Length: 113
Length: 114
Image (tube, rainbow over all chains, first blue to last red; front, side):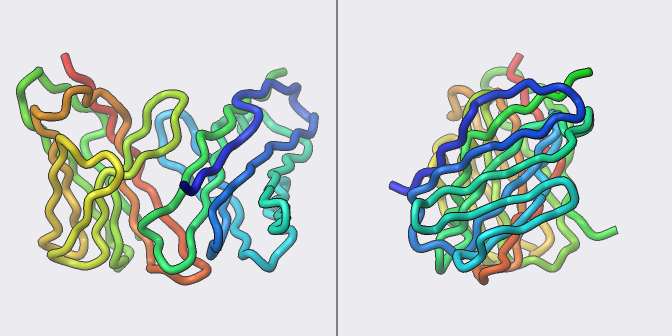
């Protein structure tokens, strides 16, 4: 069964600090892996996308990495801001169909003063 | 503005009633999806549709029904057969199945059974 597991489940950091979120997946083969940001009570919004042949992708203060051999991805947030407080969801698209997007349970990040 | 719109944002239902959640997109996407989100769990697929007049059950379709009469619209009906309908419902659409496939989400509908 295709699975996506994320860790930690929740995280609290001080404003200005860096943090790294982890995603382990069993989906194979896959077309792409995305990280989404979901604010409370809102729909998820895509932050980064990587295909199986890419190792890293940046979007401002967000940097995603992918190791296809170990089936791991990480999302690194630099110089965190209060507005980074949200859930971050790892999503893997299996090859051949977008109908079975596999979602992780997310990491709830809280940035405090 | 192009996007995907869900309504209403909040919905209350009495036990035994059917309710319909609206989802409209003007992105010209072929595929549309309905997901359910519960606290501490990942999004779970209820139904999806890859073309007009066709839809498929997802992982948790029992107690739900959909229609896809127009490309732009994919309403979800939560029937009285759904025993635990209180949840956050998300509608999404996507371009297809290529390597750059991206799901665009609406803002969600929070359904509460009272």
